[in-house]
Amino acid sequence: MTAIASVSVIIMNPPNNQPLDLQAVSALMDGQLRDADAAAAMGLMSSSQARECWQLYHLVGDVLRSADLAACGHDPGLATRVVARIQQEARPVVAVAPAAAPARDVTRPAANDGVFRWRMVAGLASFAAVAAIGWGLLGGMGPRPDGAAQLAQGAAGPRGTVQALASVTPPQPAADPDDIHLVQGAGAIVRDARLDELLRAHRQISAPPALGGFVLNATFEGAGR
Amino acid sequence: MFRRTTLPASACQRRGGARWWGRDLCRAALLWCVGGLLTLAGAQNVGQFGGGGVPAGPPQRSVTEWLARLQQASRVPSYVGTFVVSSASGALSSSRIWHVCEGDVQLERVDTLTGTPRSTVRRNDTVMTFLPDARVVTLDQRQQGAVFPNLLSPAAGQPVADFYDVRELGRGRVAGCDADIVQLLPRDAWRFGYRIWSENRTGLVLKTQTLDAQGRVLEQAAFSELQLDAPVQAEQLRQMMASTQGYRLVQAEQARTTPQAEGWQLSAVVPGFEARNCYRRPLSGTASLVQCIFSDGLATVSLFMQPLEAAQHPREGAASMGATQALTRRVADRSGHWWITAVGEVPSATLQAFVQGLARIP
Image (cartoon, rainbow over all chains, first blue to last red; front, top):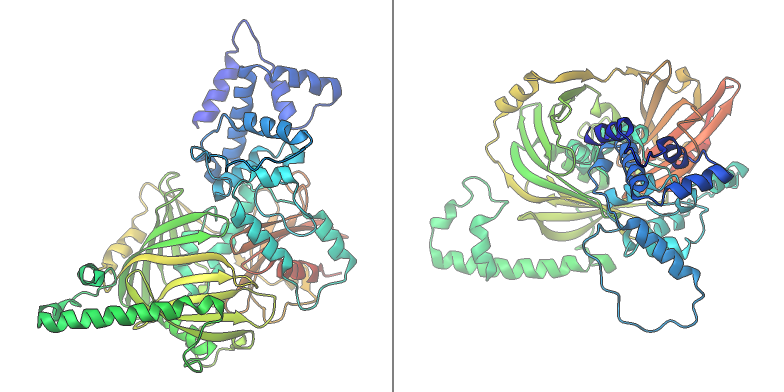
């Protein structure tokens, strides 16, 4: 509610000296701008006010998608770190110095934390190219780009899971062309309120009494497993 | 020696269980030492199970006998405990549990300790979920028993026995309670395996692990603290279900249906899975959602079918959350396009087989 209220404040009272084109920010987020319009909007994004607005809009989107996402704090340094990492990786690597292990930044949330990964997927959904980060991608995705793997620092858990799943071979592998289509079309599902609702409907009944039944279901239900 | 200090405060201690404490202290001290050594030895034994451990002789109970024992244990008179769930993706959630069983009536309360506050209260098949932030209480009266056969009834079909092997792995200790460890391993790649810690007196499930084909833990759930026979007032739980003042009551509107009645047919069924139940409930607008539930007695798969809304269902995909997998797919027929979501605690290949076997009745 706070986020939505603040948005309306910005819209109602743009600073007099620097009126910000909120429509352009919103359209850029939704991927509706092309060519010159997109370039102009990207120009806008150099102002801190526009970036604040961008963050706020994404927060609103997150809250509307799933209540769990609202609980995540905003990490102002994320964009800077992503840009720095991309620049670093763009350079050809001549020799890798056997440097000491980089110091861990324990102040930011772990990349393999369940809720954090949700947020990564939801928040970056507008950057279609970054969709490979986040929670398990199954089947047909091939090896993950190095960038994605490094962004998910220490994400041995999820990656291990994905590999394990990909290697399970059913007894009768389907040679159906539909199968190929499905695997090729497979990507990450962005978590939203609708998927949450289906997960909840499933979890209400999913655990048999022999495995803890109701207690297990009620603990899982709504939790970002 | 540390056992001497932990024993009196043991979380698994039953009321009145410390009576022998007052007896001859020397004898008791000797018992603790011997007990400690035995437990250590047991723990070492148990520690080997990951690498093809040494089960003590042939299984004492079959798969169905084990499942019946675990299900029977949900009728223990009472307990209070803290329950923790952790998945391979790193997500961790926990809850506080109150349980009481009087005759055929089971009452339970589960309060989440992580994430959005939520209290879920159950009286047999009636489940009420209180969401204090939203001031909403939901009421669900779906028949859990209709999804999972009553293993305690000898007449019930037991497909589960044909698809899992049982292996007893010795003894362990969870939440201060001594437990029998049993492993249920799938005989094919369509399902996951389970390792279960069962309280050795009552059979109560203290801990479960869901395992993939390589034996890696995808998800685990356990009591971190448990008091068996704790004083739980059934009356208080009953009153909680009756006091919905200040809350908006939302009753799940759903009707029993069949896949055929909804225009769906499942041409190929994954071995061992049986159709258990099918519900239809309204969505926003004129559309409705159909949920069909399949189970092999341990693993559960839900298939959700709804009309495709291009804006809301942009592309097919798959997701993995601990042991839970999800898969989405479009299906087209003469009447239009449909959106399928499969969710289950099974390998992703199993969900793919389910959605590929699903088609509109021509």
